Each structure stands twice: as structure tokens, then as C-alpha cells.
Image (cartoon, rainbow, N blue to C red; front, side, top):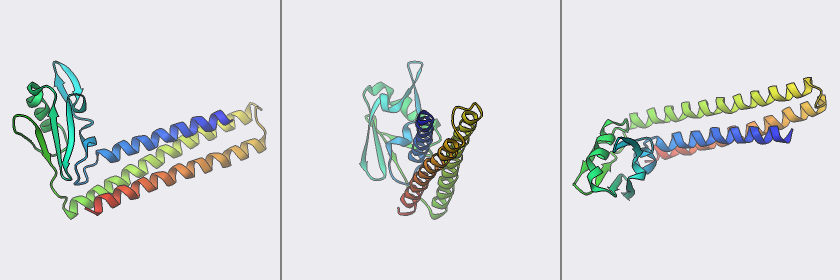
Length: 184
């Protein structure tokens, strides 16, 4: 039964990791290199992440600077950023690419907060689905007479406690991201 709890925690942890990656990709008016994680550059016919082709730094709170290790890839990186959905136009000076993040409008902040809430709710649903699968496994163990009814009840209570703690972590991540967006 402990293996079931460990597997459940591992799956719930993956839900939190996915939510964390989602939140990092949300543009909150501050420069964050994670926004470029999903941008792929055509590098000699192979899709390559920008962070494997260039040094990405944050010289100012609202600016990212991308300095390619191979200067000939500057145009491809700029093209990939333009075709991506990050919504920022790069400026290329021949050596580095700069991405300037404009301040967010109040309306855009509210939209982002709604999106943050939606993603948080999706993560909670995923965590509850993991709990449901684990509960089904417990019922199957009881049906196969591998555990007693008391063990099943105790297991269900422990699964609910685990679920509650992960839901609480999700809500904390959601609040933190909302405050980050609204405080700029």
C-alpha cells in the first residue's frame, strides 16, 4: 500500500511541476528567460531550443538579452522569436537580440489573472484524477482480499490528506503568481 502512496505522490508532483512550467511561461511584464523555453530555432535543419544556442541574460527587469554563441544564427533566432506566440518584437543590433517587455495594462493583468486561475483549476482537476485512480486501486486491492476494510478506509483517508496538501500547494502557487502579475 505504501508503494501506491509513493506512486500517487509522484504523479501529483508531476502535476505541480507542469503547473510551475506553465506559470513560468506566462509573461507578467517582467523579463523571464523561461518565456523562451518553447521557442525552437531551425539550426541546420534541426529544431533547437534558444537556450542551447545562446546565452540569455536579464540586464534590466523588463529586458532579455540573447547573445548567440554562433553569430551566424542571429537571424534564425530573431525569425523564430517573431514567429512564436510570445508577442514581443526582438531588436537585433548585429551582435545580440534584445527583447523589451512593455508594462502590462490593467485589462491585460486581469486577463492574465483569469488565465492563471484557469490553469490552477486544471492542475487541481489533474490532482483529483490521480486521487480517483489511487482510490480505484485501493478498491481493487480490497476486492482481491489483499487488504482489509479498515486498511481501505485508512488508505482512503491518507490519500485524501495527500490530495489536500497538493491542492493547497497549487493554490499557493496560484496566489503567488497572481500577486506577481498584479504588483507590477
